[in-house]
Length: 87
Picture 1 (cartoon, one colour):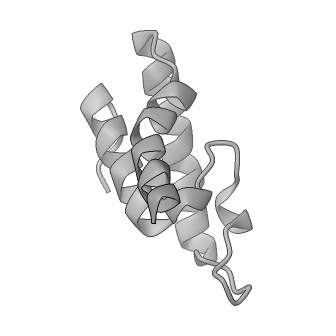
Picture 2: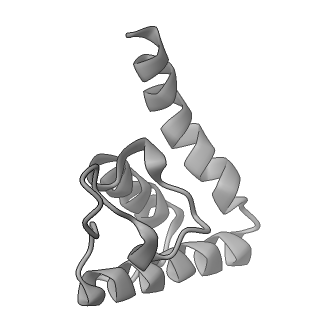
């Protein structure tokens, strides 16, 4: 998988996580901690390691560009959360 190197890469990854993980996503949560509704792990060990690597790449890119990764994540997840609240 392509390394995350730009702000656009970070945004694209956030959108994938919104689709894959949903509103339970948090940048501080390790990949192994995500579970499905029935309690099974969301990711395999390999996928969890890849997730952890990509989270770190997102933080690294944002730090290099002077961006707030937490703020960016909130900017993309908040509209989905508001949509859910309106249902």
